[in-house]
Image 1 (cartoon, rainbow, N blue to C red):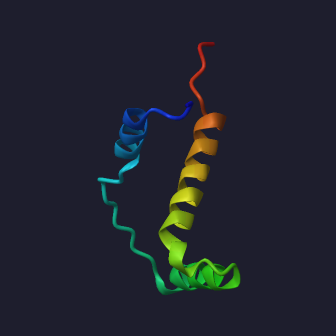
Image 2: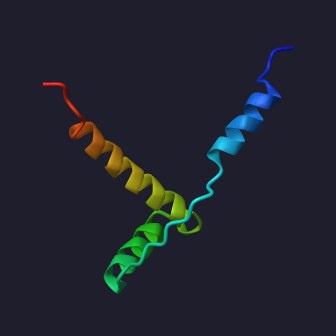
Length: 71
């Protein structure tokens, strides 16, 4: 019987827990844009996941573009 080690899965779940909170304030226009996007793409229940993904994607791109160089 081959499968994934249950201890490994438990460690993975623990590593993915979100323990840190950031509060983000938006103005009326910003909120309207997010609400419109979520309504258009039917993602009202996953607003935080969408915003988290977009923020992380932008940051990863910036880090990739501005990575440290030796020379």
